Each structure stands twice: as structure tokens, then as C-alpha cells.
Image 1 (tube, rainbow, N blue to C red):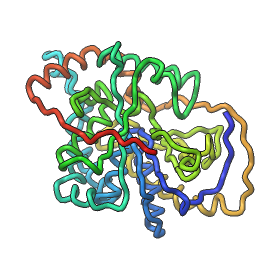
Image 2 (tube, one colour):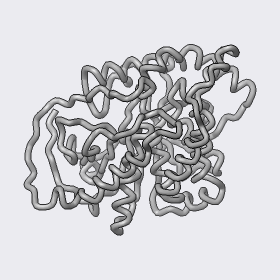
Image 3 (cartoon, rainbow, N blue to C red):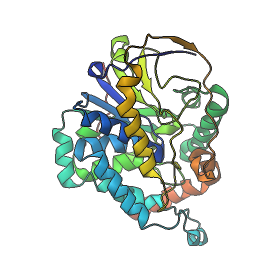
Image 4 (cartoon, rainbow, N blue to C red):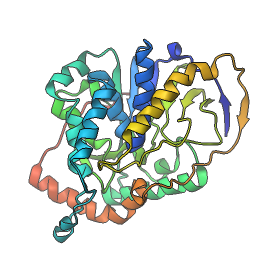
Length: 349
């Protein structure tokens, strides 16, 4: 694949995309906060999935700093990742199942929802739909396998294997949902990485973490739209420039591996360090690329294995929990019956 280092032209950006990445998304929060501090305005269209979609939401309804404070408060009150007693009931109960919804609600309350409706930017979120032939559990397993194969072999930013397996990514407008509860449910679903969080029904169909199909989601675009798109990645690719162009779009990656565990949610989780790295990269962005001539870089991407705890790799772990989790989905929906009708898919022209 051919990638070219480039300068940032923030005033030319019409679409800003937030890749998923759990706690790594605090780097995105730091970057954008730094740019906003300098007077930059969010573009007309935001796109996101998983925790990246939540960060984008907080920028429209509150601020990334307020969302960070809420996150830290919730982490401080949690001392474990998993409730082992849940196994006696054949359930998988992770702390994320109550922490994430509480965090989402801190910036999507009814008061915050009014700000979302009147924001100058539309937020489009990416959700993964299961393959009809595989069902929910089969799609979760297939998505996990596709993720591992792409990570170890293909090293692509936008993987194709999930689509070949029948797993589809769908784009929905968070700005068009009817109320705050619908917004919260949709944001939880686009980050539902089994077994940490459970898939839910959106529009009468199962949906789960959009990162299973593409962790850096982009709706179909014209050539012109690509030129005005900036994608904020959360992985660090040492073989690539910090800011580069690929397939007509501009990509911005962290200047180093984001120093935080992706899925930890306990008091010692270093979300502050992830945010500070984003602030640092944001402040240095213009100086780092001002005056440089664009140079071609032809290298194959290599995603470095993460040395953080095993819980870091949620889709690897999900292979173990997919079957139990799928049966748990059915049982909990019989108990709660909380289907959310989301907005119709946004089909960009």
C-alpha cells in the first residue's frame, strides 16, 4: 500500500472520522480538544464507531474534558473487571456493562440531547449487523477471526474480510434519533464488543460494535468527499508518517503507542496519559508539518503486538465468550424487551 506524508489542512476538512479503540480514543479527545482550544470549529459531518463515536458525541453535547472527568470518577469506584459469581448463573458480567452506560449518560442526558439536536455538526455512527447465514453468535465469532487475520496478515486500515463473510456495517444518524434514551442505546450498541458488552436490537435487528466490520468507519464517498475527510486513528503504525494520505483521504495517527490499556476500567487506568498525548500531538501538529514537502512513503503496515494486559485484545477474547454471550442476549431480551427504533440509515450521495 502507498501512503504519502502530508500537511494538515484543517480548514478544508468537511468530514471528521473517529476510529474505535476503547481507552485509546482518549487520544482523539485530546487532539480535538487542542484544536478547539486554538479556535478550530468542528466540520459539518462527524463519523464514529465504538468509543470513538462516544468521544464525538461528547464534543457536541458537552466537552471531552467533562467526559474524561466522568470516566475517571466511574473508574475510581470500580475495583474489578469481571464478576466471577456471574458464572454460576451461566452469565458473563463485565464491569463495562454498567460503567459504559453510566458514562454515556453523563453527556447524553435529556439536557445534553437538546444540544445534540441543535449542534452544527451531524454525527453518523457505524454499527455492525450480523450475517444472515451465520446468525448473531456465528457473526461474532467470524468477526473476531476476521479481525485477527487482518491484524496479523493484511494490516489494512479498512479490512475487506468481514464483508466477504457477510458481516455488514451500517451507518445511522445519531442526530436524528427521537430522544436521549434512543441516543444512549444506539451509542452503547455501536460499542457492544462481546463479551464485554452485549449486542442489542436497533430498528428490530441485532447490532454490535462497528469495529467488527471496520474500526475506522467511512460511509461511501465520492473522490471529492475523500479529499475533505480526516480520519483519527487510535493505533500507532511505526512504519507510517504521523499524518498521511491514503486512497484520497487524510489520516492522523498517534505519534507513539497510546499509553493506556484499551479495556481496563479500574482506578489505575492511565486515561489522563492518553488524553495528554492527544493534547501534545494536537499542539505540535501545525508546527510539525509546516513547510515540509510531501514525500512518498511506500511501506507495508505492521501493527505491533500490544504488551498491555490480555484484556487489551477484546476480539481475541470474544472467541471464548461468543456462544455464552449469544444465549445471554436472548435471555436478557426476554426479561427487558427494550428494543430501540433507531433512525434510518444515512446514505451519503
